[in-house]
Image 1 (tube, one colour):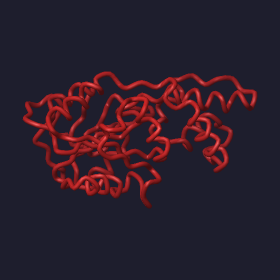
Image 2 (spheres, helix red, strand yellow; image 1 turned 135 degrees about the horizontal axis):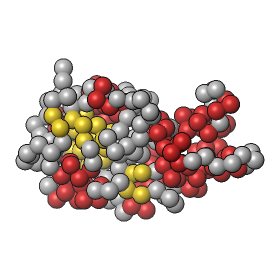
Image 3 (cartoon, helix red, strand yellow; image 1 turned 60 degrees about the vertical axis):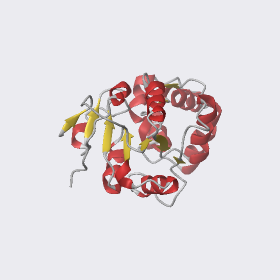
Length: 232
């Protein structure tokens, strides 16, 4: 890892793209309420937040697998649909922005740059998050996991976001808390910043993901770690 957040900087890229859950938004409490409703409907007791939290960035199927370990990881489609339908009712009721995110987004805007979201969350759910945060007119582009034929770790969602705004890939960067985020950014040719404050399962080593910078907290990005070069 060649650089650490906190280097002297001059400006933000023209477009800063973020993952959503685990990067901008601490949505684990919403997810916990979702799986606990599903468990209660089956006569089971609630899960603890710390048991579910590491799996949030891996999506509805992974969280359902943790909530119902007897499935052995084989989660049927109807259970995923139940998760999504229940989550839609809990969305935004318990989640919050990570500390420092509001100031970071304001700084990006004040610098004349734009920011957007590329997430594997279904687009219709991701868009429902925006009004409660006052982001409808601030988020320049939003790409969900079902917006295109591919999702992260494929680079297409990141490339699509840049193209939609007419921004060259060289003028973008991506921030995410999962290995798939970093893989997607590297494949797209964008600097890849690892959000260490996000969700990780025990034993994961984010330094091994191949990102350009390890970032401890959103506020560290106020001193943007430029120049960045993508490792060949």
